[in-house]
Image 1 (tube, rainbow, N blue to C red):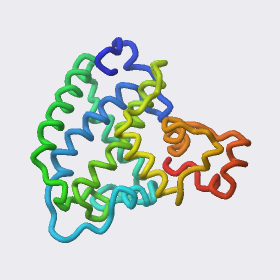
Image 2: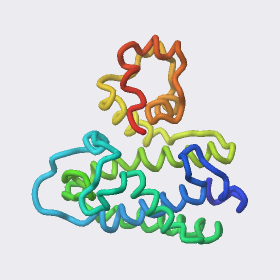
Image 3: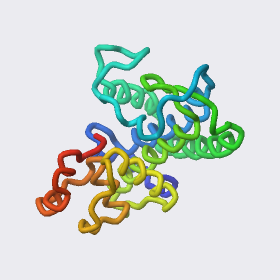
Length: 214
């Protein structure tokens, strides 16, 4: 999708407050680079969390090795500003493509059972960390699609992983009476789609847990 975006689209604001399409593209590029770089480095010890536990943390709390006076969101925002660094859309586009190619190639050689640790999170296996990235890449791809007026979709394999994470955070699958497809569930669960009064009624007490991620 990014490959076909006109240059003017990169300046459009997204529903991620304060983030443009260009910044979302740079953020995805950075995540891909770190996925097979610093986030793939082995650490001593055993894994003590997984793809679900990764998202059970306070997003506003300080993180190990990071500025304690900044929220986690502010740290990420500062990083993205650096990753954009005034690069034009053409360079952001080719850099993202290169990051995708490198990540796809390098992932084959990284053992899924390797124990890794991202700053601010307990150790987990690399395979579980990769599973968590399904959610990140999918929702930000939808954020970009939303910003440029394209259909928001999630590949079936990624959707299975993401809805599994959301089910675990919610405590159970959402009621079938909602009639949600996977995309609607992901948008609702990540706070990208407001719930109607009728949806809250059908959810009952579960509605208090949504959004599951912010």
